[in-house]
Length: 116
Length: 114
Image 1 (cartoon, rainbow over the protein chains, first blue to last red):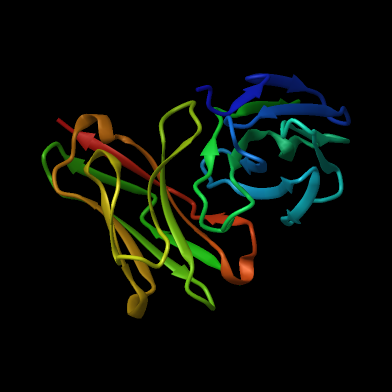
Image 2: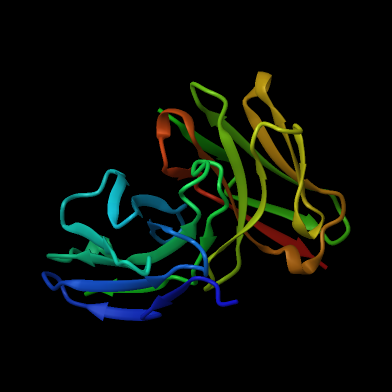
């Protein structure tokens, strides 16, 4: 049983560019959450997708957008990259149809983004 | 608003010694509480979670945590540290006014000395 997978593992971009990160959830999971983890900090919630819609959003600007596909996989898009967007981006999957707030989230290994 | 405070960004213990990582939370309603571990260049792995059942929660790798509502604490302990426990540990809270999002603390790096 494959766990949560993310691609790519590493990415280097320059300021102003756009980036797309991808996530495949654990088998059987229907909910995907995205987090940004800056160096030396805890993960910060970006948004959560359930049934192909953004269910909740954290304090991130509109430059951060996402999508969930019918197979529950998800993309995170970041436009107009800033130096401060350099971070590890983590995807987590869970079952959202039950008690989502207490459901265990399974994390992928992350995508490390460096903006120069 | 919900928040999580982890006391001590770094904790160092000797192998075989007690591990105690401190976490205090702020929540207007009974929350769901979690401890995660992160090894270098990896994602987060759930150690244990509190979901309003037993206040003493046992997790993987010999870790446990006790929910104390009066102290708004959820400290993580392990009776005897092993070298393989060296990692970053995150306390997190979800539920209540926070909705579906999970809020993480800043993390505590655990060092284990031989």
